Image 1 (cartoon, helix red, strand yellow):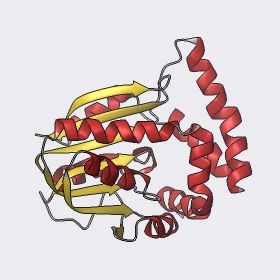
Image 2 (cartoon, helix red, strand yellow; image 1 turned 90 degrees about the vertical axis):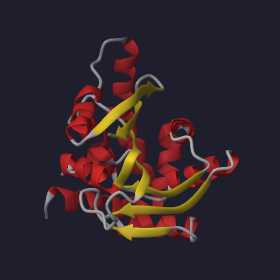
Image 3 (spheres, helix red, strand yellow; image 1 turned 30 degrees about the vertical axis):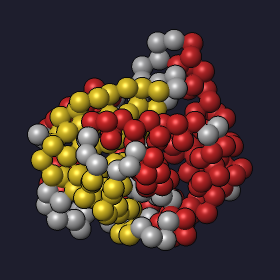
Length: 236
């Protein structure tokens, strides 16, 4: 089994407890991160009607739920929203929460979407799990309309320069795997999380990869003691 297949299998295994684990481990703060990402995106993509949003690595549908709620609050019409993920287990949970939404089993680097068909592509806490990351960025550029937006929320790698950074590191490496293991009965999955962050890119290098694919970063900001980073990039 290859690396990507192992990651998908891991998410299938924890899918039933994934939502509750997220809420507990982030103390609910992840909701504010998603909320902020959606609101800022609609500010940058100032349209009252959006033809298509694709949420990649959609998991259990949390981000799709936020897209729909924030759009409704701002009187924005979304004609079509689709969730894409290689994990059938995660999408099975999403389908129960959002039965009106279309979900497609596919990876980020090979999406069954037409070229230049999509206004917004989001990927929340999933890009570090994509083995063929640069290929995925080229795929995003193919699928997006001109001036369309890519929204990436991720736990990016940060240099430890303050006591808070070390405190965050202690939580991610010591407390999170234990709590996640208790909730999901799969400690390995929540040991993978901090390891995947340590092995992941810095924000600057991630932006370089986006530019290589023709996606120009227009907004980057870290939230909650630099735990979560939001990057918004426009197809040029």
